[in-house]
Length: 195
Image 1 (cartoon, rainbow, N blue to C red):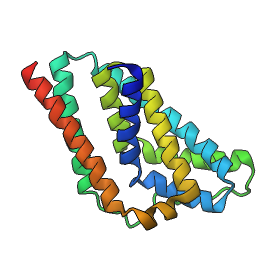
Image 2: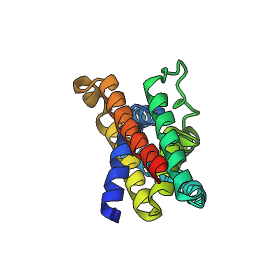
Image 3: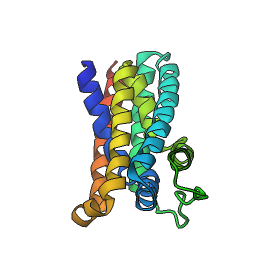
Image 4: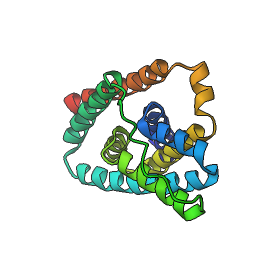
């Protein structure tokens, strides 16, 4: 697979996985309170950090023999699909944190960075990014596709999250993401078994 295809595949998977995530909700809430560009700068930086950590983890996973990588990838995709399908909404908002005392760029971007960096640590999309980095051994393409997808979802949430949910039910978004992961899991497990 070429780098553009890997980046596009990564973008699609991460985009669909991130839509129903708490980070999108946090971005939406922050975007309604503060200047959108300040919030976006903070979340984009947090996503860059999280993608970099995922790429390091994926590179370590890629050191395993190829059949093992395919098997682990398949299992992780199934786990990701399960997490999406059986996820219960949290009663407490993880996006609610101490608000900045003023609305300067550094205060708003810093608060947005911290909220998203903490919320994304060990999150499904970070695990999927590591998984894709190990599977395709093209960290630049996977990292770019993942970061762009995360930023796109954050931007959509900041600007128009409520409008999307008026037209597309969250259940549909979750099911499409889960089906994509199940298909990838099947493909990975098939490759692991057949060698």
